[in-house]
Length: 303
Image (tube, rainbow, N blue to C red):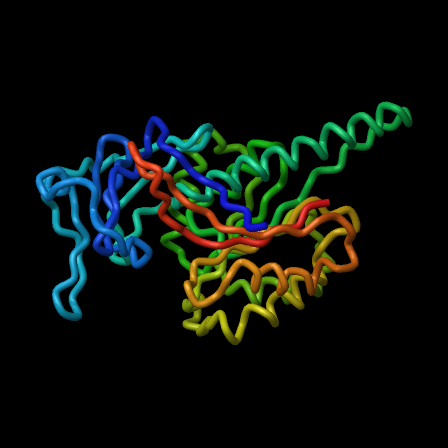
């Protein structure tokens, strides 16, 4: 049975409408319109409502850009539960946060806290003072949502992304979320090279998060193609899973793959770990409607 995890309206986020290849969203007090290939149905709201957006991402031939319709504040922040994100209108049509991932953030925080509770109980029972830190590796970490959620739960986090801009924004989000002193190590690097170095160092991680793009470039313009590079990366990631792992998450956004495909790829590195493996889709529920906008796929393993 397919798992569909749904993000609904919150104080700082709302999917107002979708259709005709676009979506209309509210982030805090700012409303934006941008393309979405999943929105193949007709819009529910009239054009008058869509034109109230602060900004619209438009394409004119080969040129793409944000069109400012109403003022967008320079210091633009939104809050998702305990996390604060600094947003910008980026050339890629993105703004620095993916609301649908909030489901994973809560799940990760819960799993890490449960492990600490179990470990502390076991240590107290055995009259020991051991309280080893849980280590998290976030590959393709982007602006840090998963990293911050794990840090809030008390984990030590290594956040890796090839984009200096994304890492800078992740650090800004850390500070805005009141986590300036949290044990998060930010690394600007090609994830494949970083994993190889961690294997040589003998480093192990209890939680591993992977959010690979379909296509990208590393720090030195190393080309990443998901169809060629994901399976080899997973085989190397297997070498840095700890002896007492907690969770592994693999996210995806490409329409050419299914969550079943991702689950079966993840199975190759988790088959000897016990635990359970699941997969599904992430979606956002449109306001005042039962309509769901598909936002991505995932596979995840838990102990």
